[in-house]
Length: 475
Image (cartoon, rainbow, N blue to C red; front, side, top):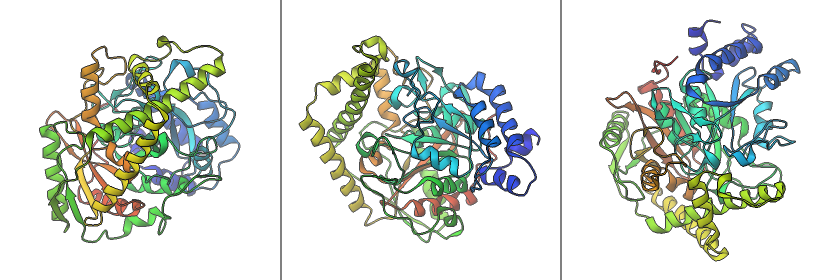
């Protein structure tokens, strides 16, 4: 298989070649590893190679799943693979090696995926760039001086560069959608309760965080969701059951949708002209496909939403750090984590159990408000981010200019974080590039449990304005 041949197939295309006996899983893995060797020194997207585990999984016999033989990456955050470190991008966890797999990893293996590495994440996924003291900077394949997004920037950079067709990602404030937007990919954040978090925890960040993938093609995203969705044993709750396999949604007509266009961030920060132009362009495209697009406003209590997110994220990270310190038998110090992580967790320690209870109550109230809004509309349309991808270093957790860091972070999540609080499914689609050649993502959100509706619309937009062949020059 030549370079161009490998890049021309998505994950389902590669799996079909394996199924037909035209190529072996080992040969596909060779291609992925060759690209990793060639491109990763520049991108720094893959931080824990797993070639030995990948070869062993093939040698031991891959299951006859829908993605048998397809190379895959796990994000190095909150997901466990037995015998391989899960560092969360933090020096304090650099030698943390679990003895079991997360449920989602078990399901990925069952689908036949060949996991050959772990992708970079910022420390605990707390920012919108993938930079850490532990592993360094991950670069955007479209422009190496810019961020690949966070916190799934390693996954997005690897997929955008052509190392593989899709990779695992997670999203606690936009961390699937933002890297997808930065790197010109498709990214879907599922509904709260759709993806299993077992066997160790019942949910991520009190339901604000979930997991799925970034991919080049919509159908790959659908089949990956089919492979892992659904509750695991002991799950505290579950999302509304799907109506049919998500892969089947690709050929279904989305119908005439009523779409609410929202062009102002939910946290009050300004929107860059490039992002305004991108969302207007997306609205026109939707109208050309027969959908009704109407400008609308969805007002939320910005201060309460921000305070709630800080309490939940900071409290969860602080408890994780305390548990690690207890395991190590010593006290935490500021040198154990990056400066902004320390500030975030120290702020959480000043809050009470009452504050945390109020935060949970607030995000549940926000979820009901968004769902009520969606009784009048089928979809919400926004830019994915409030600005194009930032320069490296600006949103870094170690940026000494805290004001610059916070402004960049809040600008990035101004449209995405609401749907983490509310629990609604949302996706980023690569429909626009600015004059500087950087991708500008477009976000759609749907009713709780309506990933099928999002995928039907995404497939229609993919057919109307294909993006898979639009690749960065770094290849």
